[in-house]
View 1 (cartoon, helix red, strand yellow):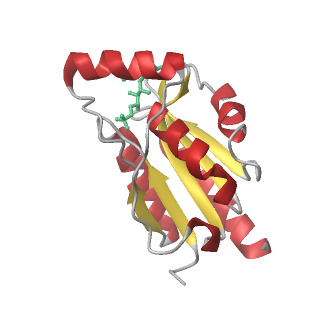
View 2 (cartoon, helix red, strand yellow):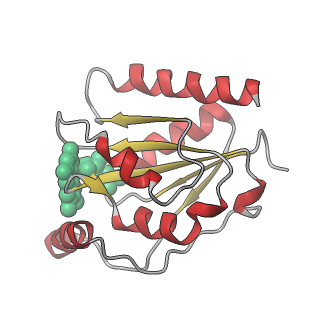
Length: 163
Ligand SMILES: Cc1cc2nc3c(=O)[nH]c(=O)nc-3n(C[C@H](O)[C@H](O)[C@H](O)COP(=O)(O)O)c2cc1C
């Protein structure tokens, strides 16, 4: 079994969620995996498509390569950018297809505005019967970024010690 059995998965269009998840995976010594849906989301056209997909809750097949089946991980941490007050459609697609395979979950959102969009956590729970142990909404470049990321890491470590 890999490291301490934590799998970090993320979708990132412009790199913010990728960076946040790289930091978290490194701090936990966890495996890091990118989610892809094969859709071109670059440029203005891509931006629009993200907004439309998030609003309409459109999802397609999502690909990823983890070392072990999802059911083998003690915790899966899922990272998504906020799109139109929702999770990205790529992460929604992943959760729809695989949410029931997660034994324990935690969520990381990155966002561009002051609004934490914490209602997204409950939206993500609709696809994950296990719910989430903890969650954090990070705004890259903000004063509280490192603080809230640390709080999140502490809560994940608490879970790992307890379980
Ligand atoms: C289509 C679209 C909609 C967005 N909607 C929101 C939003 O509702 N609230 C917010 O705070 N940020 C919003 N953002 C900003 C992203 O959530 C933010 O820049 C995020 O950190 C990007 O992550 P990434 O670089 O991993 O793609 C939106 C971005 C896009 C592309």
